[in-house]
Length: 473
Image 1 (cartoon, rainbow, N blue to C red):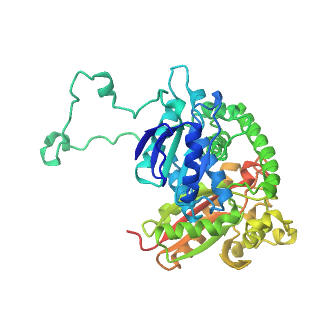
Image 2: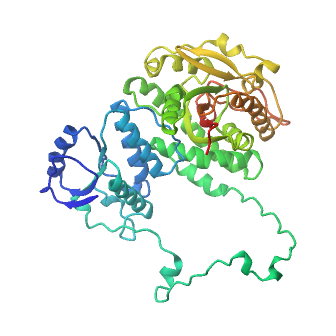
């Protein structure tokens, strides 16, 4: 990695580097970047309210540039680390024909906080970006006016921070054969630790503060890390009633925003990773992990929180013969019904700009009983997809309270998947995904028939899981 200042040293070939450049230096470098086949990404100067959000701004701008370049959809979820997301973006840029990414950040002065320095989280982001320049085809350009900004370095141990004048004390581990025999005597079993409770007040406050436009990655993280845990706490009775109001406000805002964004995507082509991208994501993950073939398994009606529980159960059932290599968050097209998602899988992204086929008869013809627990094969265009209907077959009925009903759904889904997975050849990539979700109306004694087809978070956001079957070392 190289660090340079000023516009005078302009390379003929871009490389992994950190540079502080004036506007004219960026203009001169742009030609070299484009000639070398790199993807150039610009960000506008962030405003004062964007402190701590630099990672989300960077991620969103790179995503939009990749989409314009025609790069494949992301294969990892919004809850992945920033470094993992950047690695994924670099790989997708190469798949789209770019040799690397050059990120030109707008001036960061507005992010300086009351302490006179950049936010600690923004400092972490900049250190991660600079680290990527050392061994990846990634270049970071900052404004020349930012070279004197203050930032935070890597964290240090408290012993070094608070007792710098004293040498840190090292404690050698005691080998088993050196322990006091008295210590070997069995003692009373320690009480099992209590499961930590969800800090629902913090989650509620963060959801309430999430007003106005947000980058896609920020919305996904709020859903995965705040909305879903808070929703679980509410239905389990671990949070006060006012937390439900925060969930409803977030869901209403999400629904309005997604309806507008989905309509606009038909013109702008800007969209998140969707259910229709499942085949492409599965193929990418298979290549990454050296799988010999790919099998797509659609669990009809599996919404995100049910998918999380299914993953937990599959970990214990399939281990050590299978491992979940990737988790992704997928968005369902509107209306969020099965026939629309299958139509888009068959036609690809081009289907979004054409009239969507909502086959009401197909959506109502769901196998029941034993047939619903059988994995069946169907074709979506030229693709072979396996489908499991055990969740969808129960959504038209009333049921017990929401926690018990969701748990029963997950428990019913796992055995057919395990049987199916055991019949696959070694080194097969099994991509398990939902097509849409649902909402459960809450009554006095339980839950009513599910609502489907809308744009709420529960109906739109579904899981994708890549399971590598057999040949695990």
